[in-house]
Length: 83
Image 1 (cartoon, helix red, strand yellow):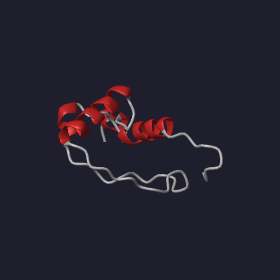
Image 2: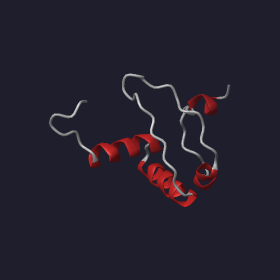
Image 3: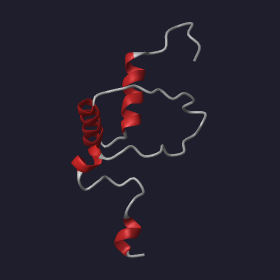
Image 4: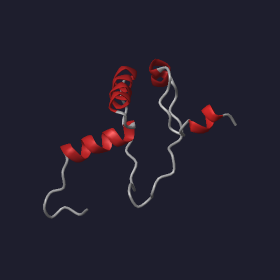
């Protein structure tokens, strides 16, 4: 293994954002199952999916993390709701 490849992180930013946006989604990484217990699937246009991925890339976060934050902000827990 070269020094260059040993420094490359597992989730390195893609060199070509346009190609990354057009790429098929990959399987989700293993996460702490107690942290996120439900999966939400929505249908969006390819154009919106691209804009979301670009926004996440520019912010240096994953799409999933960015959308979790957005949903938590838009739908805060209310008193009496189960957590």
